[in-house]
Image (cartoon, rainbow, N blue to C red; front, side, top):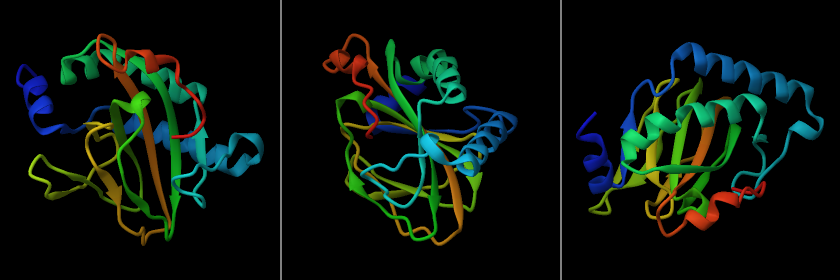
Length: 184
């Protein structure tokens, strides 16, 4: 893992296979399915995707976010403050427009939890689109504030995803560590 911080900082993103185990990914997916079935206050929508339920800062996702900090610090080369997390169940027809994230998402982790396959795109340093295909437990770690990212129209029925956001504890956005409002 010695070369990971360098590669992450040069490219602006890094695909990490098996950031969590498939067993852990399945546990998170089961929790999302249960929350969707229960409905009510647990289900929210956000401004990025209006017809796919999102779940903000659940106990299981919060625990996982803290658990990942040591691994992500090795990958990024930064001491990290967590900001917030949320999970989403993308539904058929969902589109995630090309965007960059706000300061609280300086270091973003997009993790596949399963369901119908659906790639995420990023622009590389040469401004060429890269279609990243992940398996459950895999993630792409990227500079959310700097790297353009998006998804094309989803043709499947359900895709389970979780987003963990952090800031460099010693960097320009360290002030955003307390910015955990419920909108991505």
